[in-house]
Image 1: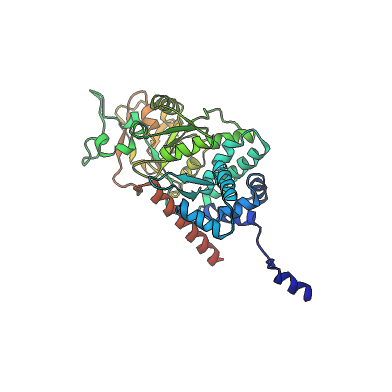
Image 2: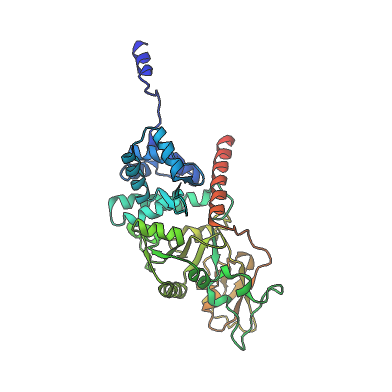
Length: 393
C-alpha cells in the first residue's frame, strides 16, 4: 500500500494510455478499425516521436487553430520555442498536420487520416516503412472503405469532358430541357475549367497503385496521375511528394488518363476543389465501393449515359469501359441499366459510332459549397457514427 501511495504521490498515472495507441484510436475513429493495428502502430513509431505525438494532440479535433492560439496553448503546457518548432516541423514534413496561409496569420489543422496514409506511401516508397504504410492503405481499401461510419460521399465522379461538350455540327446530344448550355450551367463539371482557375496545380503519384506495386501487384497504369490544387497542392509540394505543373501538362495527363479508361474523381465540392484522381478498377477502392453500390464513398457525376439504339452497332466496346456493370454483354447483346451508371462518360467518349450521349440527371446528390465544409461534415459524421456503433454494442 505504501509503495502504491508513493507512486500516486509522484504524479505517475496508474494506467496512462500509450500515445501511439491514442493516435491509432483517433485514426480508427475517422476511418473505422483496420485488421492489422500492430502494423500501423509500428509505422507511427518509426515516423514520429512520442513527444511529437503528444504535441499533435494540442491541435483541435475539428477545424483549424490560429498559430498564436496554438503557441499560447503549447507554452501553457510547458513547451519551449525550440520544442514547438521541432514538433511543428516534423508534423508538417510527415503530413500529420497542414498549414493554412492567412493574410494576417497562419492556422493549422490535423490532416485526415486517409490523407496521412496516402502521403506516407508516397514519401516512403521503396522502403520497409513505406511497405507498412502501403499495407495500412490496402487494409483501408479492402476493409474500412466498405465500413465507413459516414454517409456523405467525400468524392464525386466527373464525366470525361469530351462526352459533355456541346455537340459538333451534325451530331445529336440529349440534354435536360431546363439546361440548354451545360458549359454555362455547370462549369465545375469541366476538368479544363477546374485546372485553369487553379492558382497551383501539383502532380503526385497514385498512392493506390504505389501501394499495390509495393505489395508486388503492379497494375501497369501510369502512376503520376493524382492532382492536388491550390493550398492542398502547395502543401504537398512543400513536403516533397508532389511537383508543380502547368495547365498544358495537366491536360495532357488528363487526356492520356481518359484514353486509358481511367475515371475522374474529385472531392465532392464546388468552387476550389482539392484533388482530382484518375482511378483504375484494379487498384482504386472508390471504384470498388461504387461497383458494390455503396453511396458514401463517391457519388455519380451530374450526368448519366443514354444510348441511341438506332445508331448503336452492338460492338460492345463500351462494356470494357464500364467498371460498375451498367453496360453488360448479355448473350452477345448490349444491355444498359441506367440506375447503375456513375456518369464517368468513358463509354460515350470511346464509342466509335457516337451512339452514346450524356444527359443531365434529374436528381443528383448534394455537392458541398467548399472543401472545408465537406471535410467538417464527414469528420462529424465519423465521430457520431463511431459513437453510435459503440453504444449499440
